[in-house]
Every structure is written in C-alpha cells, then in structure tokens.
Length: 229
Image (tube, rainbow, N blue to C red; front, side):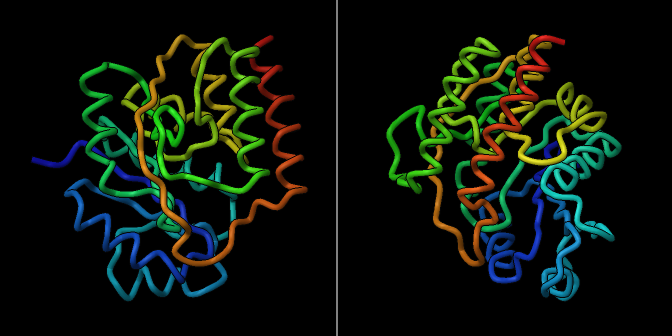
C-alpha cells in the first residue's frame, strides 16, 4: 500500500546540508518525500542526482513560495492525504514528524504547526527573529483572530483540503504568516505542537535585518488586504 504522507523539502543552495537532512529523514520514518531543487547554483543538484534522492529541479529560482507550491502541486496530483514541509538545512528535527502526523489525524485539524514556543524548548534564536515572531503573534491576533505562538515556523503538516488550496494559490515569498491569515479567513482549523529545532547544518540564512523589516511590512500589508477582501 502506498504511503499517503508526502514530505516537501524546498532546497536552494543547500550543498552542505541536504545529504545529511535526507539521511536523518529516511532513518526516522518511512514517509515519501520530494526535494524541490529551486534553481540552485551550487552542487545541490549534483548531490541529489549522485545519491538518487527523489527530487524535482526547477529551471530557475522561484523563491520559497514557488518551491513549496511546486511540492503541494505534486502532492495534489499524486493524491497524497497529508503533506509536511521540512527545511533542507537540518533545522527541523525529523524525530518530530510522527508527532505532527499523530496530532493532525487525532485532532482533525486542517494544519498542525511544529512550534518552538507553545511549550518551553531549548530554542534561542537571534534577537531580530524573536522580535519578528512576537510581532506576528500579535498581528495574527488582531487581523485573523487566531493565537499562534510560532507563526514563522515552516515545520507544518496539512491535510488534503489544504493541499488543494495551496496547489491552487500560494504566496510568492515569506508565505508562512500570510497563509495562516488565508486559512483563518476560510475557517480552516490550525493547531500547534511542541517541536525541537536545531541549528543550521551548513550555509547561511538568507534573512538579513533589512529583509526582516521588508518581510514584516509586506506580510502585514497583504494580511490586512486578505482580512478585508
């Protein structure tokens, strides 16, 4: 019987971490996975080919939104019941995958987010990142009337209904918060469970202080538009 759970791994220039991430993933569970190589310019594509990892390679860099939506389109067309987003840089602990799966099946929620803050964890994070998380927590309370302690977490699982939504429409960049507004407006249910997150296994985050400010302004603007219209 085919697995009904797909793990989506967007990857852009993750040559230092992708092999270890997949090794940890396959050692932790037997779920299907698809790596979306988002037009990487380093050896990411070669590593995927050399190791026979399941992947799709985009001809150009679409950004995180386009890469993730490609994964959701794949999940929808191949009739998966659940899809999980997992970072290629090793920050998401694969040992928590079964916890996310169990929660969405037992609670009948539409999305379950792996949270660093719903319960106390060892996560520290930079000051700018913590400020952003705090800001979006309050913004979501105001705009979408939902309480999400870790709104920027990309470690999340969704059911078939949400897979169909995301396959049709997904924000281009910085999508994590914006999709929560979309789901809340459409009366989908979202829940959080505690997860532990690791440091990056390699490479550098693309989020700079300037990009963080742009991110906060852009997401707030589009979230307000979504809540009104």
